[in-house]
Amino acid sequence: MPAESSILPLESHYARDLHGLYAPWQAARFPAPSLRLLNAPLALELGLDAQALDSAPGLSALLGQVVPEGARPLAMAYAGHQFGGYSPRLGDGRALLLGELPDRRGRLRDVHLKGSGATPFARGGDGKAAIGPMLREYVVSEAMHALGIPTTRALAVVATGEEIVREGRLPGAVLVRVASSHLRVGTFEYAAATGDADLLQRLARHAIARHCPDAARTERPALALYEHVVAVQAELVARWMLVGFVHGVMNTDNTTISGETIDYGPCAFLDRHGTQSVFSSIDHAGRYAYGNQPRIAQWNLARFAEAILSLVDPDPERAVALASDALEGFVGRFERAWRGGLAGKLGLVEGDEPTAVEADEGGLAGPSLDALPGLLATHRVDHTLFFRRLSLAVRGDDEPVRALFEEPEAFDAWASGWRAALPSDEVGRQQRAEGMDRINPIYVPRNHRLEEALALATQGDDALLHALLDAVTRPFVERPGLQHFAEPAPPDAPPHRTFCGT
Ligand code: AMP
Ligand code: MG
Image 1 (cartoon, helix red, strand yellow):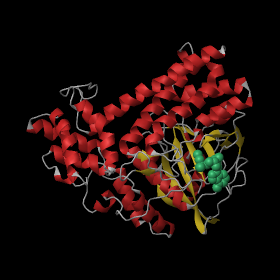
Image 2 (tube, helix red, strand yellow):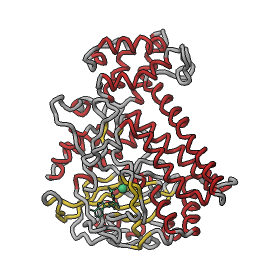
Image 3 (cartoon, protein in one colour):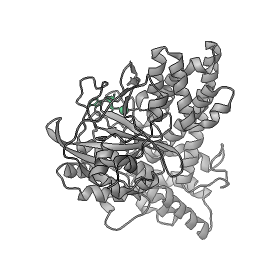
Image 4 (spheres, protein in one colour):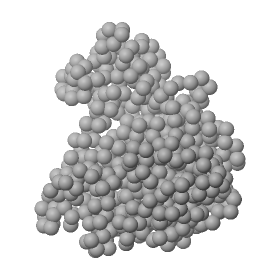
């Protein structure tokens, strides 16, 4: 049997570069771990042997029970603005960075545990996680990946054999999470607050090396890093909006430098469209509602700018001017990503008459893009089904999509402009419909189904969980027997509530 260090050949870049931004730490002891989910394709991508991971030494390595040679596990320090208020010391209270490893394309990826025991950042929490929320993160993050949205990934969920205390007693588990890095806006806020200029500089250098190495060769590397993060976050939030994803807890400690979605606590996919849709049980003011996400991302990026201003330019006024200019770039980038993405979802391509993506007044496609969010919100139409059924309308059958509207005439009025921008020939339309089905998912992890699957899995029955995972990790391919995953919650179902910190 191979030793832990060859099963999980970890390196320790963060530990080496960023002294002052972590506490060295080890995972709690877990006497009876058992594997619940293992992501074999991801293991392959990381150059790991899935079979070896699914063995006693494999589980021991995955859970940080034995520290492989070269690894230096640690709890990361970070601060964060949570619901607008600043918390100077958050950090990995129940998580650990085991280390990094190069994937098969040579990119460095973090291997990180969630639920691995209380750390010096636990602030009285037990440091543990229940199986339900860890499986939830596994399913939703893998669904996001399958949708082509940048995200942290899930390598495994391991049941610890322990019971943890929440509302009642629940089976404990650890999620093994993989990410391009776990650097967050909150990491920079923490480093800036220490007042240690060298620490902030080392952090920026580390972030640049991992996420935008070209920035190191520019005149102002910190500004180039900032511009990079503005760009990737604008792109990310546009993609969330296009699939109807509500993150739910867009605090600055959950805003990555990589541009990956992180932290799947109180998130949800919209069913009936609504700009004010909120699912989090603690977001009473609707700060993180669906329609607020682009604005909140900008707010978070402004906090990032404040943290790195001193690196942008020694003259504070000049630094503010440069960073403000860069932040203003968010709107244009978001709009481009959003409009381009929406055009694609509607089966329009650049060059359609009149130009779909850049459509201006007088164009047909332009108004049909502009009017769409209002149409969906006013009529509370199911987000996922609307786009999926639109390809049927391109193929000549309007009824399935019309049926989503209480007043189908509203769809007809909108659709006449949209249809005029599509090719008039049969073959051309057929190609567009096929293209739409490749980008408009039929299966997303709808909360009512996800909760059902998690409730059963918590009791040890994983059948529905596996079926759901199969559906949402091939989200564009309609398959027999999976229809119930495509259906919205019944209209009389209570509004969904999700919980974080669980
Ligand atoms: P999250 O809501 O997962 O983003 O966590 C916010 C903060 O609370 C982070 O600093 C977490 O490490 C910490 N935290 C959440 N749950 C626990 C727990 N059970 N024990 C210790 N710390 C926790
Ligand atoms: Mg978090």
